[in-house]
Length: 171
Image (cartoon, rainbow, N blue to C red; front, side, top):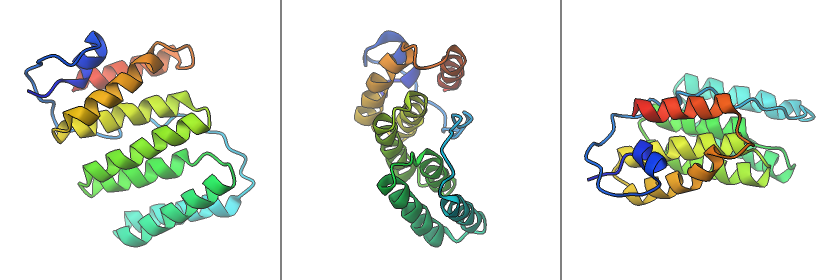
């Protein structure tokens, strides 16, 4: 049996849990608010351009552009959360859920580097749910274990915790 992420988080264990969750409705949570100095307006323009390419079905070009923007942001010490979220959303929309989960893992790691615990928590939650949907219990359990301490951290607002709890309860 596949442990439910909700029960893993609630119980703190990965015992036998009978139900497999319904398909993820990623991204159900609103993106965390991000404030970055738009000292690179060209990056915002490229992000919007990549979004447009994705919207019109030019997924390979969009992916290439997203990755280029992410690389520039990383090298400029600008948090790439919005762009990573967009890339993960595009992959999810293309039914490439494991790719989306891997991108969310990358977002969680970037969130640690840039001190963005709400982004980290949201990325871990969504990645865990996607892995769970694909029977990757090992990865889902790992994401739940990483998420659990964040949910009790004062760095995550009460409203954010409530939204995440509601998201997990929908599963």
